[in-house]
Image (cartoon, rainbow, N blue to C red; front, side, top):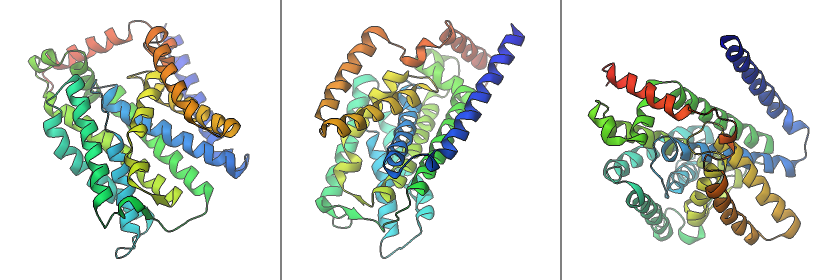
Length: 328
């Protein structure tokens, strides 16, 4: 059994290495149109992963995740324009810092809520930001704000690729292979019990919330520079969060690779519908059908088809060992 597990692990590493090689050479094998589609697929896979940090691993369904995507986008847009005129790469950490501060300010009170109450509170936060960006002059109001154009599709593809790879690496390291991940899963399974065993659930939830928000802001910064123009609805809109939720549910809630599977699949379907029919209204129907089918037939998502039985039980046992060992 041990030899089989080692062989399986190495095969997994080889598969991931091969995928990275394919992704690295892809820009030279396709035209710019398909390259933009590939860039968008990477962005949505990364955004779905960022939502999954809180919604999947911690069990807190966030319906306002687009707020952090928009904060990253507007931070880069404002800092790249006059009077600041900062280079793009310098605006990413600035956007991450702004987003982290907002996440701490919002997460403190809202993470005391659970279920629908938390979902509504986060949705309201995103709506507040839409209205704020709409009425303020420095954001451009409803007219939006432009960014200096940079017509290099390969740059944005690799920017999204690096951001997505780092997001999944952080998720794997913190939520799948660390004590922090065990704490997050323990509070997801039974928060009162986790508190009783010594886990500081308020701190752990806030840390997961900030990590999730900061990851989304990075993709917002890259997106803003990529499309060169943003407005409140295009980066704070509720449909952005809705798509992340469905992508994670389809791929597998609380799994590492589920968001990648769901994100890429749904975005490619969206683009194919637009290419063939020129109207994405049909895509809304597909989203609804996907939710129904997942709830009825794939409660653990596509990734759940490949997961071994007993995985959640093993995680719960690991969390129990952790807290019994006195880890705070």
